[in-house]
Amino acid sequence: VKSTTSAHRRPDYTPPLVTPTANETVGHPEKPATDDPRERLVFVHAGSIWSMTAAGRDATRLTMRANRGPDTAPAISPRGDQAAFSSPREGVAKIHLVALNGVGARTLTDGAGGGDTDPSWSPDGKKLVFVRGRPDERRDLYVVDLESGAAPTLLLEGQDDDPSIAGWPVWSPDGKTLAFSSDRGEGRGIGLW
Image 1 (cartoon, rainbow, N blue to C red):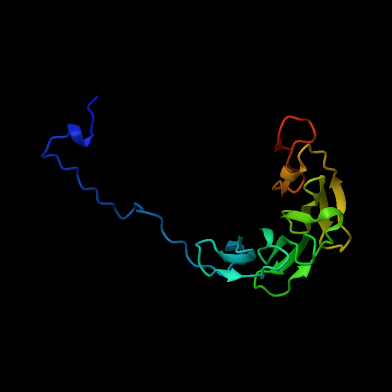
Image 2: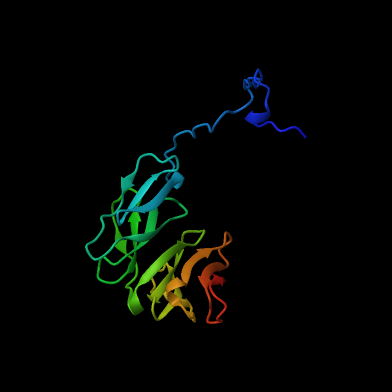
């Protein structure tokens, strides 16, 4: 096997030029612009929730950071029309909803039991699962039905040796199960359940 490093090349060697044909793509073609809100991302910057296109353009601030603490954990709805996020703007962390145009933010949960964080939308956009509790005591999984307007219901009690690292629930694509981070008090360290 011959090495092709520059130390072993002949001094008069020039690599051949390769010109792409019309059927080949060079680089990453730019995605066409779209007005579909599902093509947007939500993220946290300086404690506020922002939205932008998937191409990284048209950044728009949706919320203004409150003095009590930053807005966190934004999750865009399956329809792409609003985002859920957690914020201590009313004294304790609660789940809030904001339209992607930044109009109409509203509080969804009451933050009982130490605060609500880590919202995640069901695939049909009708429910949100979130984590409730104090990170130094216990963090439970709750679900709220957005169509019924009913109070959140307990889905799973936390049993973690280290509740501060439990949470971050995510729905399965069919909406029948959830994955979340936990140690479930088994002393084997954090894992996915």
